[in-house]
Picture 1 (cartoon, rainbow, N blue to C red):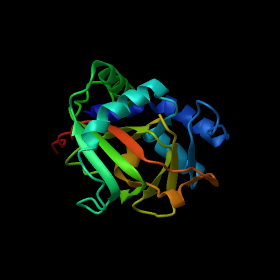
Picture 2: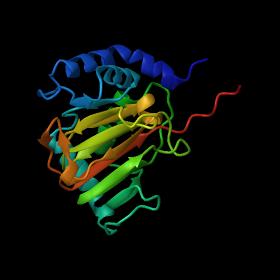
Picture 3: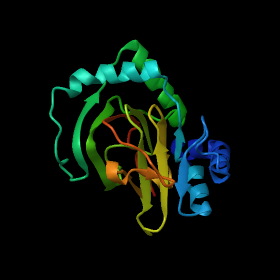
Length: 231
């Protein structure tokens, strides 16, 4: 019996194919269109069919301000750290948040309805990561011990570039332009077979153009790790 994640990814395949077609035909930079660049057309099709995508303009300016304001007090309790315990994140603050206002809960539910297959149990705590303008995230794959098949993140306050690189072949890569107020989704091969990172300000280019980095808050929803299927 297939997992809910596999079923959800299959149901999304048609939408993902359309996503790839828009990107391949040079419309990724247009308003309301995905922004992706890959080392090859075949890789782009494979990753978006597996569930890697960006939804530009997912939040309104008012919704962004609401979420940022709600996490600010909690974030201000800590200082920016130079390095994460695993060495992956630099110049950051982070917290886990499970209690939200009614308005923010509605936004987060919209994220879950968009990103996660039906019936997949969600992690109650939402991960909030605050990157300083000089901060960045090094290449890594999120541990399957702590989250399941899908990662979905909102980008607040700043645009940035997320780079995915194959663990098997460093020449296979996909860049995602995470515009301010966008939603990104990682699932399938992009989740398990590719590292992902947020580029430093001085390296933050997409399609040859500079994407200026400012302070960036990401609000990340994850599903529970799925139990292993018995042999």
